[in-house]
Image (cartoon, rainbow, N blue to C red; front, side, top):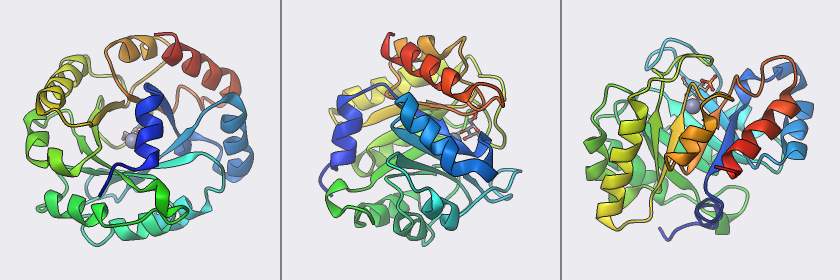
Amino acid sequence: MAPSSTFATLAASTPTLSVGVLTADLLSLGSELALLENAGVAVAHVDVMDGCFCPMMTVGPPFVKALRSRLLKDVHLMIDEPLNKVGDYVAAGADIVTVHVEASRHVHRVLQQLGGMANANDAGRGVVRGVALNPGTPVEAIEAVLDEIELVLVLAVNPGWGGQRFIPSTFDRLARAKEIVGRSGRRVLVGVDGGITRQNVAEVARAGADLIVTGSAVFDGKAAAVNARFMLDAVRAH
Ligand code: DX5
Ligand code: ZN
């Protein structure tokens, strides 16, 4: 499928901050989303966990559908065998769908399947397809699927929880992913997810991440709007 307008938007405004909404006050989700929008955040990250691929279990398509806002929906699927499940997330309005390379025997087929789907809210916007890598997975795993992705998401923590510590080797892995993408000549964004805080966000931006995912550094239960603006400023000023 041709690159989507969502992809073009992301590619034109890199680096983009994507804020994990599951660390928000879920009983006040509407106002939490409004707070992000007012702070200037453009992308909401949803961590879908199935209790099998990773220890925690979180939310599914109904939650994605319930996110009524102008924010782009960045859906990170940490679920086993997403084949035949990705359609439910696209139908729920996902703008970005990322699957793990470790989670499927047929990751190429999953990505092909996603490539044939239209954005549920605006067919012209398309669906950005991402592939995520756990910290223990060789970065070279992306080489075989470069034709079928628009995003590589390098995890800086092992999937399961927010608030974990950033694994320093992520910087080398980000550089390696960018090198592989650069050598291929393809237009693929490279993102980093997990353990991104006020302290390291600017460094991650300087290292060339196109999408920077942060959760608990924004929704720390105290000053989400101030935190969001801080993280956005750090990303923009890198
Ligand atoms: C890891 C998730 C991340 C994480 C982000 O399992 O994919 O999105 O929860 O949260 P923080 O920023 O708190 O590490
Ligand atoms: Zn995530």
